[in-house]
Amino acid sequence: MSQPRLIISQEQGFTLVRFGTPVLDNAGVEAIAEQLTRLPDEAPQPAIVIDFSPVRFLASRMLGVLVDTARKAEAAGGRVVLCGLREDVGKVFKITRLDRVLAFAETVDNARDLFQAPE
Image (cartoon, rainbow, N blue to C red; front, side):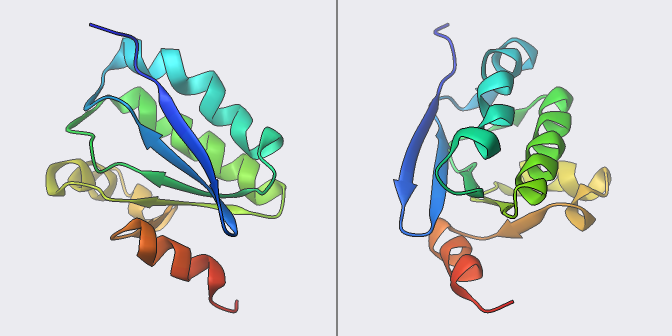
């Protein structure tokens, strides 16, 4: 199996992260964890949308990576919004109660609207 990768692009007002693999198992998470947690410090803008639409499996280690990334983005004056979660992947966030800690949107467009809405 090839190494998972992140596809990162700069959009108007935020950084968009897409996964190049449908499986984020422990090995895959380790391969992308450092890149993802560095993103709030290195991206031109700490507003980050992470699109999970291709992801069908999510290892529990990824939850910690996402929380770390969100905390770093908030410390830099931004935030992380997760979108495109399949129902079974979304349940993981509800079960772990991370749906109360992390921000979610249905689609990338919905996430974009969150960044453009006045706070």
